[in-house]
Amino acid sequence: MFDIDRFVDENVLSVSVKNKGLNYGLGCIDGIRAFWNERKKQLYIFRLEDHLKRFHNSGKSLFIPIPYTVSQLSSITKQLLEINKVSQDVYIRPICFKGADTLRPDLNDPPNHLAIYTVFSEYQPKPYLKVCISSWTRIGSNMIPPQAKPTAGYLNSGLAINEAVRNGCDEALFLTMEGNVCEGATENLFIVRDNKLITPPESDDILPGITRDTVFMIGINELKLPVIKQTITRVELYEADEVFLTGTAVGIKPVIEVDRRVIGTGQVGPVTTKIQQLYNQIVRGELASYKNYCTPCYSI
Ligand code: PMP
Image 1 (cartoon, rainbow, N blue to C red):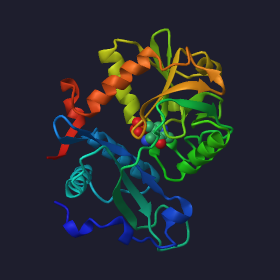
Image 2: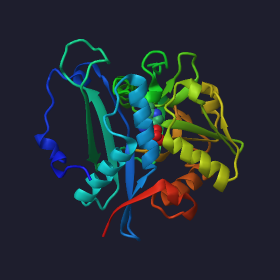
Image 3: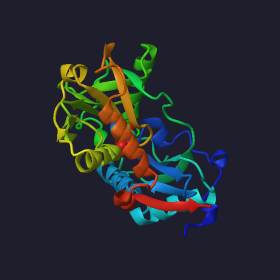
Image 4: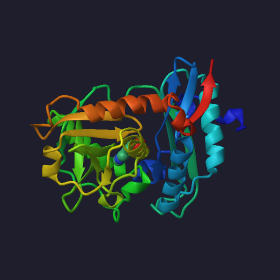
């Protein structure tokens, strides 16, 4: 058990104005979600260990070592939800960032601060989205590695979201430097074409999303559809039968319009609908074959 006095009200926390996470974006994050099962009166954390392993790997790549093991982080997360008696869906954010001992943005410098907090608001309440391709290119793996969920990378996402919203869209899609479609500002992307699920490969500067991986399982095991990692061009996106985005915060989010072009029939497609339904059952611990993805936590 983690010391109870380490759990504090968010309003009493403070960070120095000199903090390097704040000044230079020297930090990494992950995003986890827990889902409340009303029938069982039980909270389940979805793919907790996979998220925490990714968080640890991010810290390793960025020289921001996470000061707790995956198993310790897992206990802290469960304890946080237990203490707060969480009986609704909740987003959980672990963040690790550099302290304030020196001015230079040197990732060798300690200390590495860790915090884990919860957010209850809905990330994207719209049931389906109109999106546009951003004029901002996705950060390349050799710039700020998008695979490692660096806090600094979200400036790239923020610029794209800001532009999309100002242009009357709900979300932005990025192209890579080579001009291939890669991902949403904070989501992975799938297209459905001729009953095949297609998503850009890891080499196209995407975050290897955990929801994306769950969609692979659903596509292959439940829908018996081919799931293909393949570079997607802009025109392939416009001509897709269905398009949807995936992410911990948004879940499975249908896209009905890209750059003012209607996708498919303009309605949420049958493959997307089926994946949404199965995903919602899986994350709430309702499908036996995916039970190992769901860590039971608070219950009443
Ligand atoms: N891409 C980016 C840039 C993201 O921020 C996210 C959200 N974590 C995703 C993809 C989706 O990843 P996941 O399914 O693991 O949440």
